[in-house]
Length: 152
Image 1 (cartoon, rainbow, N blue to C red):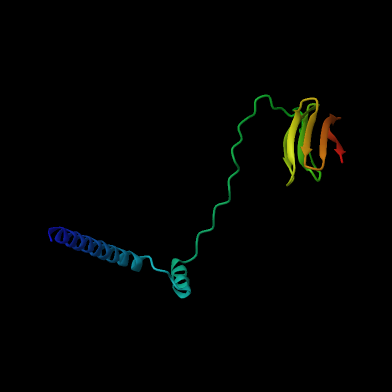
Image 2: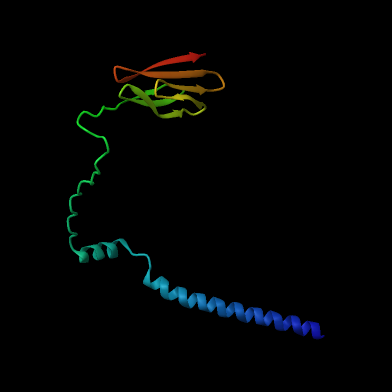
């Protein structure tokens, strides 16, 4: 008989604790839900109208530019080109006769292997289950020029 009373006492204690916790949540939640309730369209319009007009934003100020070391009016100009094939996209730029790879991104179903990033040439190989495409590029008179070879 004593084990039955222990179980009954435990069940009553759990029920009382659960009831108190539930009442606390309802009481606290009820207060907050009334403060931050969902507004109707009319209430939103009224609240916005009560604010009045907003001030105009200030025009953005130009970002400060730090002087670059070694830059001069005679600094070499970078010329960039982007090429797109079925296999992917490659971008490179020429500066002072040297070429540099900017990025190589494969298309869906293709992988990319960058073979050379410069300064004399850029070479990128794209591969799929059916084909390999090689894009190579060099600077010609300061402009990137490319050649594409496909192994169908």
